[in-house]
Amino acid sequence: MAVLLTTTALLAGCGEDDFENRPRPPVPIELTGVIQEDEVTVSPSKIGAGPIVITISNQTERSHTVTLEGGSLRERVGPVAPLATTTIERTLSPGSYEVKAGSRRAVPKEIEPAVLRIGKERASSSGDLLLP
Image 1 (cartoon, rainbow, N blue to C red):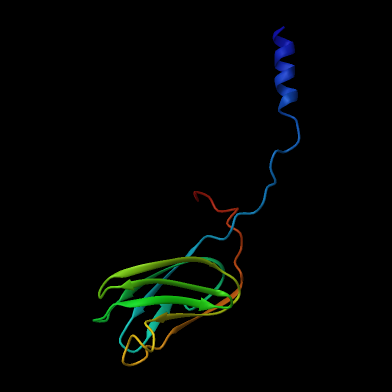
Image 2: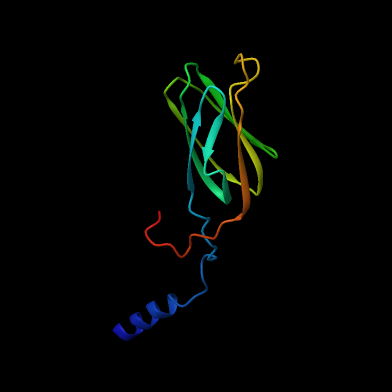
């Protein structure tokens, strides 16, 4: 009887795979940004396509709305108070994107946007250990 139960358990485990082993997306890249009186800067500004997290600090004396824009993507966050931070999390495709603060109507002098250049997709994180 024990042999029959052991054989049945082994055969049950030898079926087809229940899922497809798809590669994981690339590990998110952490970018930092600063809003200043005359410009927005984001570093690094050239990366490969995939998930990103931008943490932006407002170093001006006014609150600003932050916009990430490029292609068909347009995401707004804020307003961000003076000396506060905000975060934008997105998966970006290859192309050029702008990170803007405020608008022509909201600030007396336009703040120059930061430009992100997104290249080809980054490698999968499937081979990386200790990732969630």
